[in-house]
Image (cartoon, rainbow, N blue to C red; front, side):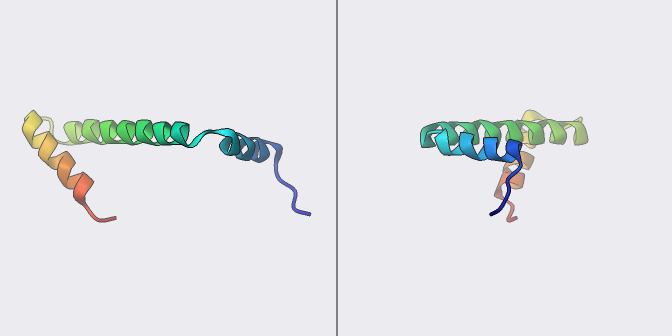
Length: 66
């Protein structure tokens, strides 16, 4: 028998109870948050860049291959 940490068990139980549409909503929110963080990072690294230039850099970052 494999013992599972109580907090890990709670995480697993919540994941199993969460409807797929809620999981999709959460994933999209996290993605939007990550994109906004990257936009701010680019803004700090390129302080003199225009909004269009930042958008171009952001699009290049999004298009890169992992």
